[in-house]
Image (tube, rainbow, N blue to C red; front, side, top):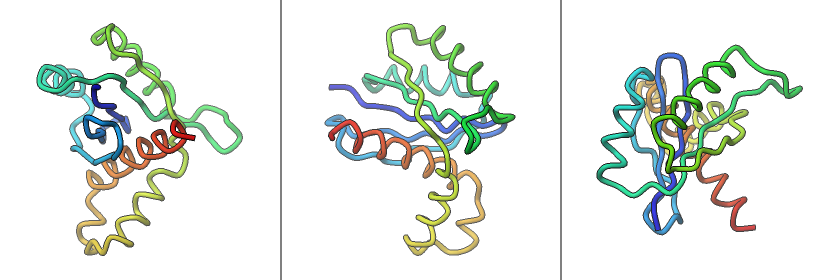
Length: 138
């Protein structure tokens, strides 16, 4: 069984989270510059079996596209081109950054750590991934 990888794609930074090999727990992995996503993933999938890639798809509350939606759609096309053997699936990313900020407070992270945007990105990816895992098991 391969890991499931989740991407919180942004114009500048991309947060990445992965499951354990048994696909039980989502864990923040890293935050990288968005322009290095493909090379990072090529290195990662060379070392780890990845069964599925999830990517957060941004929409407004009324389900209209945001300014970031076209960026994510372009990233999805790039992922499909570079990883044709790995299924790509979108997940709802509404509120994940706010949920990540709240989770960091609840985890007891110091204010300075909570202000590091890279931490928010990878925790947001982990939240999307954990939500996917929970919904899948229902």
